[in-house]
Length: 202
Ligand SMILES: CC(C)(COP(=O)(O)OP(=O)(O)OC[C@H]1O[C@@H](n2cnc3c(N)ncnc32)[C@H](O)[C@@H]1OP(=O)(O)O)[C@@H](O)C(=O)NCCC(=O)NCCS
Image (cartoon, rainbow, N blue to C red; front, side, top):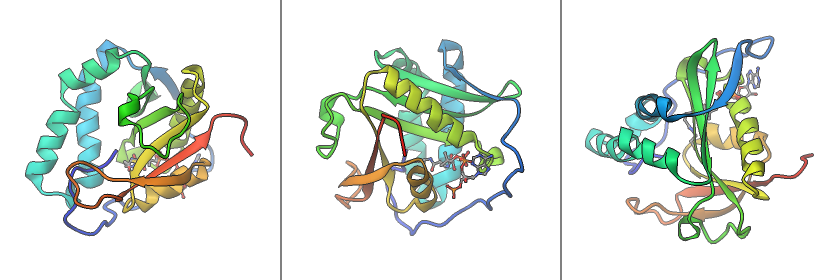
């Protein structure tokens, strides 16, 4: 959900599209299968680049994408227990995904105190259809899947210099509960840890 290293201040690359009068028709969610692994790898790397490549040297972007979005890595993550990738399809074209999983406790920030908390590890929408409600549908789906995994809390990490994503999460009732670093980043508190309760919301 974030680049490995940051050497320049954040800035937006995409102009926001105007809001549609009605939510997208033809949009639905489904769980990813092994047949989606190659797409998850390609789309994940492509949308990661679209969001963050202008902030990070190319060799580091390439290394991160190879490690995080390799086909073998996606296949392994999809096969893990308590790990669900949700794909958003618009008229049968895949336009986004969100990934929820019960994380290894050793990889869970200390500020996440619910032992059954579920991690929203990634959410990406094709830049061509951002701002049209796809991300919101994916959040709704992620919340439902997280409840199914038995958690009472859904948490995520987001780079502090990604204001659009932070505002998006706040709109979906996530609140900052702490800070965390990233192994390759010199700033020990560069990520916001955000969480929301999985019970009925306001
Ligand atoms: C963050 C991200 C997943 C949001 O996806 P999205 O499809 O643009 O999200 P939505 O369209 O549901 O919501 C975005 C905005 O469109 C608005 N919107 C427009 N039409 C809408 C509709 N029909 N229904 C719901 N919301 C709509 C929402 O109000 C929202 O406003 P906000 O940005 O002020 O919160 C997407 O921008 C993305 O992939 N970003 C790059 C990668 C990234 O940063 N990922 C998160 C890393 S932690």
